[in-house]
Structures are given as C-alpha cells and as structure tokens.
Image (cartoon, rainbow, N blue to C red):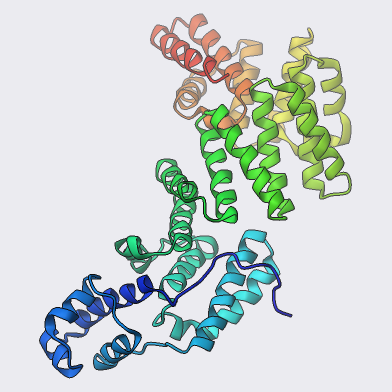
Length: 424
C-alpha cells in the first residue's frame, strides 16, 4: 500500500533553476570526460559563448538543448515526466517516513528507491537524490556526506527553498552528531530563516533546543523547545513531541518555572499512562526531581525507593545519598555510595562523581583521582546534564580545594560557579 502521508517537500523539477543546475553540472562532466568546449559546441550547433554561459549558470538552457549536450558527451539524462513524477513521490515518502520515525516505512521507501538510483543521479532530481544519499550516509551509516553533496552549496542560489532547507538540515544533523554545535546551530538557524516548511522548522527548533541546552542557554532552549513541541503536534508526530516535551520539562525545572513544569509533568503523565516503560521511568525520575526542587525530601526519598529505581538509574543513587545527607543521615549516605561503588566497576562520569562524593563525606581523598576529576568537571560540566547536580559538584570541588589549600583551583572553581549562577 502506498504511504499516504502528505508530501514532505514539494519537488518541482520543471523550473528554470533546475535546468541551470543541470547546465552547470554538464560543464563539470564535460571537463571530467575530456571534451573540449569548442568541439562540443560544433557537435550541437551552438556557439561556444552560449555553451560557456550554460556551464556557468548565466543562461538557462531549454530541455532539448540539455538533452543534446548530454548526448554529445555520451552521458545519460532522464527527462521522462511520468518516471520523474513517480520518483519524486518515492523520495518524498522516504523523507516523510524518516521524520515520522517509522522504521518499517523507511525500509520500504528505501527499497522502492533502490531500482531508480542509477537514473536519479542523472536527472532533474539530481539535487534531491544527492541529498537523499547524504541522509543515508549520515543517518544509516554514520559516514561523511559525499563531496557531491558538499558541491551542492556551489548551486545554492539556484536551489528551491525546500532543497536549501533539507541541505542545511542534513549538514546540521551531521554536525550535531559529531559535536560540532557551532556549525549545527548555524545550519538550523538558516532553516528557520526561510519559514517555508513546518516539518523542517520542527526539526530545526528541536535541534536548536538541544544545542542551546547543552550550552546552558536555557531561556533560548526553552523557547525553541516550545516551538518544536507545537510544530510536532501540528504534524501529528507524537513521538517527537514527547521527546521534546521531556527536554522542555527539564528546562522548566532548571529555570525554576515550577508551576508550568508541574503542569507539563501532569500532561505527560496523562498522555503516557499506558505508554512505553522507558517513558514511565523517565517520568518517575522527573517526579522525584520535582520533589527534590520543592524540598519535599521525604517524598523524594520515598519515590526513589519505589519500582527498584536505584538499580535502573545511577543518578538516583547519587540523589538519594545527597537527600540522606541533607536530612541528617550522613553515615547512611556514605554507606549507600560505598555499596553502589562496589557493584559498579566501570568508571563512568557518574561513578567518578559518586566516588568523589563518597570521599568528601568520609574525608578520605584520593588526590590522584579527585584532581583530574575536578579539572574535567571544569572543562566539560555539560556531561552531568542537570544544573543542580553540576552546581553541587562545584560546591564539593570548592570544599576540596579549600581543605587542601589549592588556591589556583579554588579560583578556577569560583569563577565557574559565578558563570553558572547566571544561567537562571
């Protein structure tokens, strides 16, 4: 059965910029095949100046002219309207299925496109197909997009608005996966500057929210998260809406906009009452976090002990130890951390943080472990995700530096604490 979602992009290849792009591509192909400009001009009965203008994008060729030029260099060019229309629909179905995160439809769409690939590369759908290949490289294979994809920026002024958005979004997503947030942010901002496609806008807002949250630019992140949530709802994508709403919930708590956070938590609880277990566990975590922020420590401790939460989420082990310490049970907090550390042998970030907390509670510092941990914390605090958690680790680090007379370290930590105090 054909995929019945509306088209993700409007692929309209029968327009002047499409023919200009194919004309410019012809110039590259001609040179690569070793044909001279004058020789080709004679063979197709055109002046060298006109062929040169076509190759440089200064003249828009007629389809018959393009067909003759490609034939002269013995390179195929598909111009069958019926075939192109069918191929355009299949490309759109793949992109839409990818947005919908419909794995089965993504697979079926890829299979439908596969027999068309040999002709797509040499057709008016060349740009759309090149972007499709880059998406496969980035999403499926985690490879670098091809040089052919990068060369599309040479044609940028001749691309349609949809093509520009998809080109920017693809490179933005690739940069996001690689941790190049500056480039990713720039590409997704470019998508929003066009405001031509609500689905592309939703992806741009989602990624900008995540990027800005990683940089602790919480107010801007929250603005993008709210827009993304609205767009995902409008586009009937419940899964993406839920994911961005969890980020929005985190941001609201971090910014102490607690009434709105509680309202969003209740909405998510209602929505996910019979949903996936993974979502239920995340909801449970945020309910505990809300209780902690509201300083309902007894309630938070009670909820941590429900559903075997400690075994599933190492963050809750740390939080429970912190809550025990806050409520006067320092010895029990240290014993909980010691027990957890005996089980967890892999030195993840959170395990190292628990080790540091345990040594702070017992005043048994291993300087060879603690000092590298603090320096890494100062360098990459975003690894610990939650602002309250990061600030608490900074306070432990400051206490350590003071007790051990590390003046330079105290100064570095104090400056970082000042920086993070501005986030809210």
